[in-house]
Length: 126
Length: 112
Image (cartoon, rainbow over all chains, first blue to last red; front, top):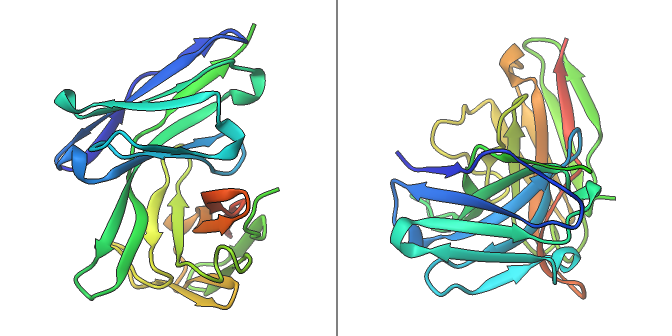
């Protein structure tokens, strides 16, 4: 089935970097953008950016520019999100999500995150 | 501080109809479609409504969405205990700050 499976929980010290992976299966990895969304405990969803697995092109939310890097390895259908200069406020669950853009069977435009990974908890603590 | 504004909480009894609002601006809801996500406790978000009012395969028709101007709404009829979850609206935003996906702060739905 179509799914995104993320890497396991991480504990990092302030100032360090973390790299989270997101492995796609059940569909053609290069056909859909991968987006990253994070959620601090008890808080809402925050979009971080996108990556086109085919071209490698990326777009980042202004808040994370300079600190986030999104890459991919098409040979293993895996996307990566690396966040550097970690601080305590970066403690959150990080999700990857597939962006489906197209026309559905009723002729309606679909532009949404239709498949989500299970989430990766990143804890930043000294 | 979310770009889209939702009420923090909503509630209803089984069988009731509840609505959740989502307010934005001309740069997001006013010019792009709205999606809704359901997040059950301890799980990843799930796409519930896309393109303002379309349901993905498998989503019950008890869930419906609408949009007017710069606001959108999610309605849940025949409320069930398993509907207890957090609900988020989302839209693409084209503003001076660049192009971003923006979310509402989320609405926690309690089934009494």
